[in-house]
Image 1 (cartoon, rainbow, N blue to C red):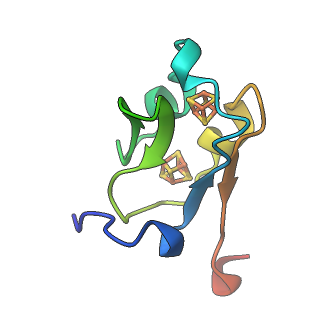
Image 2 (image 1 turned 120 degrees about the vertical axis):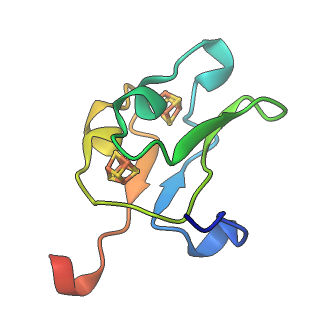
Length: 77
Ligand code: SF4
Ligand code: SF4
């Protein structure tokens, strides 16, 4: 799986102002079947660690603060 080097181009974006990972939330990391999300310990925010996604959406739906946005490719909509 390729590592997500360019964070601006990955399919899942986390609004760091809304993310409450610093308060212990790990919901998006826990629900992702691909295990591509992780908590950035330094920032205390969720982030996309690997540039891979099934667009299955629980990360966006289950985030308690609406911080996750999955950018579904046009051809999959
Ligand atoms: S579920 Fe939402 S608030 Fe919780 S860690 Fe993920 S992005 Fe942050
Ligand atoms: S859409 Fe699915 S595969 Fe992609 S990051 Fe969210 S939970 Fe993981």
